[in-house]
Image 1 (tube, rainbow, N blue to C red):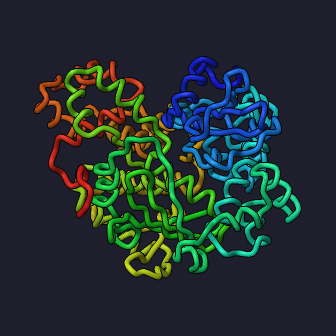
Image 2 (cartoon, rainbow, N blue to C red; image 1 turned 90 degrees about the horizontal axis):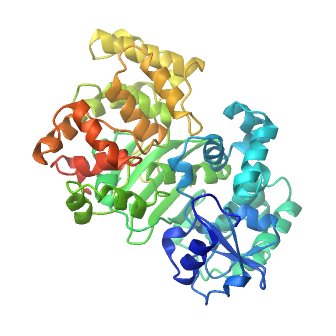
Image 3 (spheres, rainbow, N blue to C red; image 1 turned 30 degrees about the vertical axis):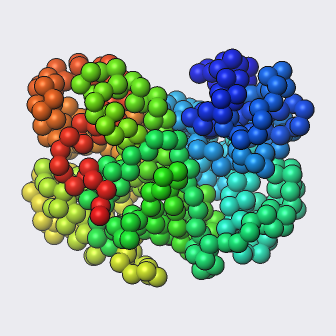
Length: 494
């Protein structure tokens, strides 16, 4: 058995035979007779069990000489929930690879960010995923190339370099090897393209997820807390600006029954992979809602809430530093007041950009720009000004770094050392910026109201003790508890 510790061969065979889409992205089925690999939910007749072998990643399948199935397109599966659940070296490395670090900084850069040697990182990835960082990045480049081939009219040479390939020849060889089709043959299979894709720099994509997905609190939260100029809700879609490694972007994300419709406008197409990864992370699209909800249903108080609206996600962020700053601006004030504070900073210190559709005007200010802000100009209590200025100074000089590779325990400790940072602020950041699925907010006003309404323990200590049975999904329990209130964050905007 070549998959991770959560599955054995018998479980994998049963998932393939039942075409269970819940396991798409958890593992991949390679067929020995045809030399293709598929997602578990592939619609074709399942192969005989003796002809199946299983791999934990598409990259491992490709390294073993298998090519992607043309029917189920396994390269477009949701990502493994493992990388959002765990905070160990492999999970942190996978989040960085998805964020394009290997393409930009190479394997040495990946290892340096993780604080390990190159050999240690390669050894652990190979042991658990059957592929090293270069192979994993190569598989990601192939997927990006396919997206660009199928959704744009760009020349193949431009696609090759936008996807991260070092040469046209490598691009052609990789596409043929992975998809058993040349780039031009892949493009010919697409009957026609969305008109949005014909706008220079704009792509129309479908972001997959594991069902069910309840969009109410997810998009409701993002829309209700949207900072004017940076975010907005328009025509059934959440729109926001993105600061990216090579430039900037604007994304529009709209919930659909079986996918998230994504429209991306990028100043540099090399940012495509990173932009998609960050949008998926913000919307928590790689979660395993069945596992989450099954655990929370074991509590008789939470079970009715889950059954009423299953599939809630944790609304996260595309920029960890931005979220931490906004968390400080939102301390002990209303949602509207926090938006006002943030909007003032954006207007004065954010980087202006052009939005073809109007409405969005700026990128959220960078830590460097915010470090230059005179605290006396901030309309907040003096103690919070100190908190703000200390935070942005440490973000700007690198004393405090928060990213997809952050060790959750270490980041919590560093945040708690900052003036004005208590358990509530740190846990909100852990939940929504760091991605800890077990972050919990026992002192939050909305949680206390829900606890009172549901006859749960009223003190933080007693409620935390009761929540032990919700582990490791307490951040999702928070979403269900918040949803008992009539606050706008809990409702899909009309």
